[in-house]
Every structure is written in structure tokens, then in C-alpha cells.
Length: 191
Image (tube, rainbow, N blue to C red):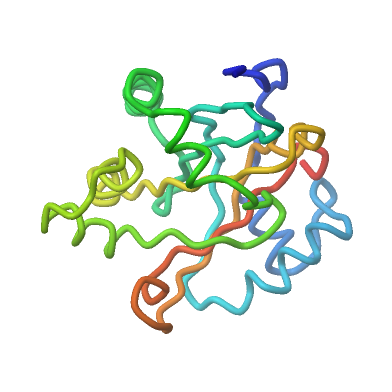
């Protein structure tokens, strides 16, 4: 087992206003390219949408799989450093390898995946949640913070080096899919 295997990548400083402009209009000198155009096409389908810094919380590489937990803000796109450090400390202390693998396996960063903090909060309130992911989601959602997981084959671990996220709120769907925050991570090479 290897932990913190992608710490050698530097988080890119993302201009959120410029990234929003790039996704909305495609008119950005700084952010352009085929991958961002793909993101924009789906992103614009959501009436409630935004962009955020992507904050790496914890990563794990084990048994040929690399997975990572990220947080992002659905308010202003930024998570205060003090809050971020507290979340990272909780993850470092309490987030198990088994839970990370189970929640992150085969969730490619370049694909759209959903997190439903409202549903997870209901499970926590009913005493039906035993994973840290559920409890963190329930605690952080009122602060405008959403947790998401991603996982790839070990040989593709560099795809987890992402510094931004585009998100959209899915208002329709069945059960846990309704009221989900759909998100896609944007790789540093695109930024």
C-alpha cells in the first residue's frame, strides 16, 4: 500500500472566473482545448452549475488501483485553508484503505460522477451510515462543501492530478440520483 503517491504534483492556481468564461462561451485565452469543450457541453445542460478549486484530501494506491478523495465548494469555489486542513486531518486519521477502494474504484476523473449529500445526510440522521464518506458529506454540505471520489488503474495514477472541478446540480432522477451534484475533475494539463 502506498499513500500520498501523487503529492509530487503541484496544485495549479485556477482562475475560476476565467474558467467559468471558458466553459460558458469557449472564449478564453487561458483555458481552451478539446477536453474543456467536452466538459462545457455537458456542464451547460445543468441550470444550476459552477466551478471550484479541486482539493485533494487523501490518495491511496493498492492492488493495482489508485484512488483519491477530493472536496470542492458549491458556493464560491474556494474552501478556507483552516477548514481544508481539518478535513484532511480527519481523512488521514480515519479514512480506511478499504473504504477508499470501495468508493473510488473505476470512477475516472474525466467522467461525470454524482454525490448526493442530501441523501447521505438522511442516512446519517437515521443511523444507517457507517462510512466516513457519508458522515463527512453530511457535516460539510451545510458549509457548501461536497466530497467526491475517483479511482483509476495504477498505471494511470497521474490522471488524478486535478486542480479544478466543474459541477452541476441534477434536480431529477430516481432515489439517490435526484438532487445529486454531478462533477467532473479537470486535469492540470488542461489548466
